Amino acid sequence: MGFLQFTNSLKSILSNPHINRGVGVARHLHWQYLKAFNRFPFELDISRSRIIAAHKRCGVSALIYSQRLYNYNNMNLLQLLLKEGGSFLDIGANIGSFTLIASEQEKAKVHAFEPHPDTFRQLRNNVELNRRTNVDLYNIALGQSEGRIFLTNEPGITTNHIEPHESERTVSVPCNRVDTVCTQHGLHPQYVKIDVEGFEYDVLAGFGAFLNTVDLLMIEMNGLSDQRSHGQREIHSLLRSNRIDGPWRCDFDRKTLRRTEDSGIEDSLYLSDRAAGRLQQYGLTLAG
Image (cartoon, one colour):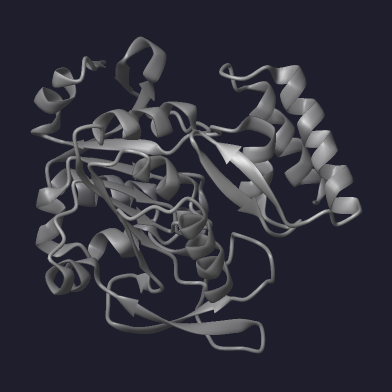
């Protein structure tokens, strides 16, 4: 782990009010010991699920090790919304933290998309470990067009991303539009998480008319989209032109979603114009 990543992880732990910060820091330091002596793989707890920390370079495993529910508000919100069922698309599922949390709700139907072959194998292993039968897995990328794309191919890491050209350090993977996949498989996305290392706009542009079925979107807004593809302003514009409003942030303990432009640790939330009434049914309030 580089020094910057180490300090960013510490900041994440120290700014998380939902954990014992001292314990979180101690576990983060212990992770460095596990890395130094390569004590992998091993299993971790996340919510009511188990997940495999397969490699010392896996940043998601490190987050789970130190903080468990590292996206406390959004993870709890997702479980609440899926309690009585619904469809969840986990786009950029990685090793499966959101997939597992969503699939704990037995009435939910989860569709998990992860393009990188090695990361997909970890995702599949974690779903099988928990014997989840309400999850469908897709080893494809999602974007604006049909074809193939090139991903960086760094072993063990969970932040491989799209590259414009093939090289010795990339792997070629199939890419589809979301509307193509939804049509082929009869999907009606209701809740969606998108975390694709800066190419979130490209995924959204491939939804086509299926954006109209979405009630809530969770989108990573960490600045990578401005560097690698279309930026946050274009994402906002695309969503708002489809009557999906945001960004919002959830305070789950207060059962409140508040409008804010500030970037935070957790993914930004966007809501359809019909979502407010549905949220109120779950005791949630929109403020701001």
